[in-house]
Length: 201
Image (cartoon, rainbow, N blue to C red; front, side, top):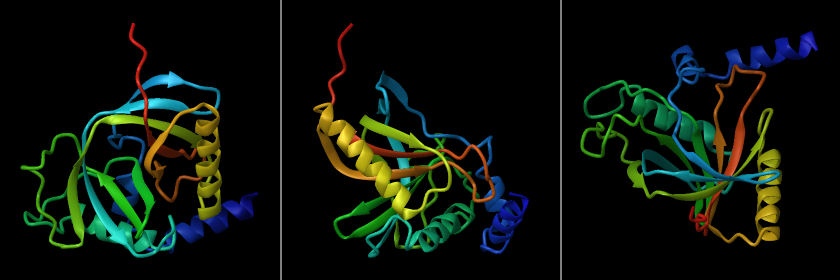
């Protein structure tokens, strides 16, 4: 077990993540807010309010194949690669999704910013947008999340929703909450927008 931990830490140290990036994804990181409206046995329904996000796309149709390059571009934006050379705090989680044309990664911007006050990215490949409020189904799992593990979680949530008669809307997303160096208590989620009507009190 000790040798496995040493090897994992070594891989992290040579992976190219600057130390400042690692610290910004620690326990004090601002998290995207949501409200749980219904708990099921293996998943929950959440309400997510509007949020401001930055997105970068790739032609790779995979959660993981281009994630390092996507992360590097978005990290460059929040670490000063913007019109005001301003540092923007990193939040959690990082959103990743597969689309009809490839894949995309999204960073949630701190809630203190609006579309008007957020510095403009210098990289034209970064799109800043405001998401609409809505209901999402969420399925949680632990450990390090490779492509196959994410796809299994996605399929598990898909089946659970079909069995519950809940219609999905749009693409599934993988949400990652942890820095690369965090070996234990890792938090991963797969979410998807759903056609959901809350029960009136």
